[in-house]
Amino acid sequence: MTSPTDPGYLGYQPIIEPLTLTTGASFVQTIQPLGPAFAAGTTVTLQFTDPSGIPLGSWPATVTSAGASWNVPNATCDAIPGNSRYSIMVGYPGTPVTTYPWYMGTVVRLGLPTQTAPTPSVTPTVNSSALALAMVLGV
Image (tube, rainbow, N blue to C red; front, top):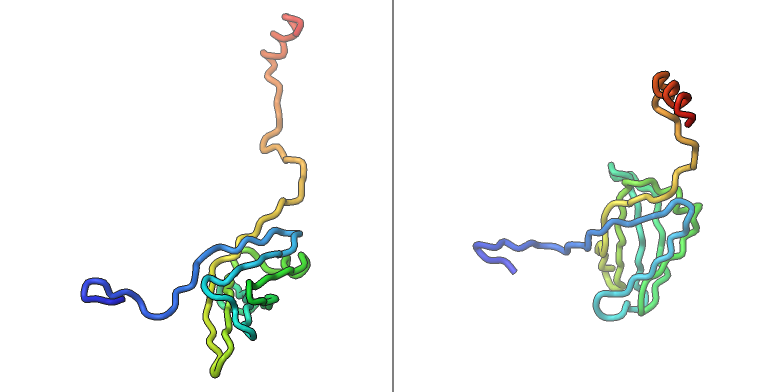
């Protein structure tokens, strides 16, 4: 709603949320419609771009009246870098098809780095006075 003191907004505003992908893990997700059930012929697609807008790929959901679900293998998921952008686009059947962004945000990448032994930042040294005192005390 708009008024002279509150201009409101025009257009649909998607839900802004980060999307977390874990390195080495599949993306398994189901989302349910916010209102009535999805109509037959509804499409839901997860689209990815790099920060400059270059497309990185898209994953169509399996859509039923109760929700949209994905089960994307880890090899496909691992190709999407952190800080990419995503949007979940919903297309409702009709003439013309009504399409809008349901969710959008930034990809957050989780994963454990390869375990390596820490490298000391300085070379350990022995304080000769402390060593002499330890020898005298028999420690």
